[in-house]
Structure formats: structure tokens, C-alpha cells
Length: 131
Image 1 (tube, rainbow, N blue to C red):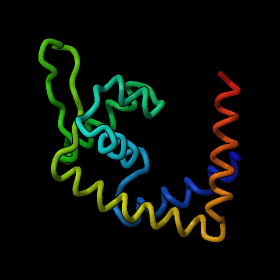
Image 2: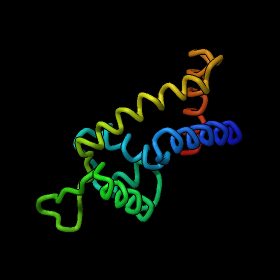
Image 3: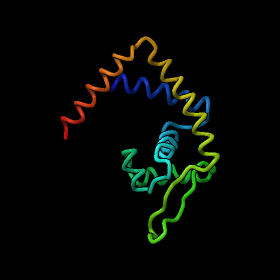
Image 4: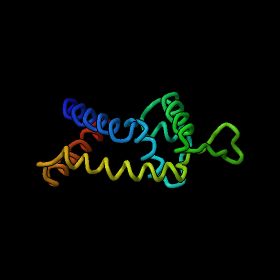
């Protein structure tokens, strides 16, 4: 499993760097914010991505500098901020997501939908067994 994961991630990481001058972690942050719709608190973003608050903070700082995300104050909570996609971030993410999907399809060429479903089901069982 680990070899397969590393193979796929390595290929996607290289393609992301070449095509978009970006990284998979940046893509993951944009994807999570897109999925949330309204944005996420930093703590929720960190939890969803399963990375430390420090890692998310550094990623978000760079995405803010690039005008892809914005930090928005949460009324009534001076310590927390909501991270949201900007219009530029949404446009950038949509382009990246379409291309990313094509790359995944290419990497999984020859693997049937049923085989993918079986893998996902098996991995789901493994995750549930550990809890």
C-alpha cells in the first residue's frame, strides 16, 4: 500500500509542480476550502487535513500572500479566523482540480471502477478496525 501511495503521490507532486508551480499540500488546502463552501476555522482545516496547526498556518500564510485565500474574522471570537477561498483561489482551484482529475485517471488507467471500489471498501474496513 505504501509503495503504491508513494508512487501516485510522487507522480502527482511532480505534475503539480510542473503544470501549476504549486504543491500537493497547497492543492489539498484549496480542495478542503472548496468542499466546505463557507470556509473553515484554522483548527478545523488542520483536523480535516490531518496536519499540525503550524503546518496549516504556514500554508495559509503563503496562500494569503498569493491572494488565493483570505482570513476572515469571526464575530464574537477574537482568537479564531475563518479561512475562505478568494475568487482568484476558486478559479485557480477549479483549473487545478480538473487537471488533477485527468492525471489520476491517467495514473489509474487499466484499473476498473470495480477494482477501485473494492480497494476503497477494503481501506475503509481497515480504518474502521483501528478505531
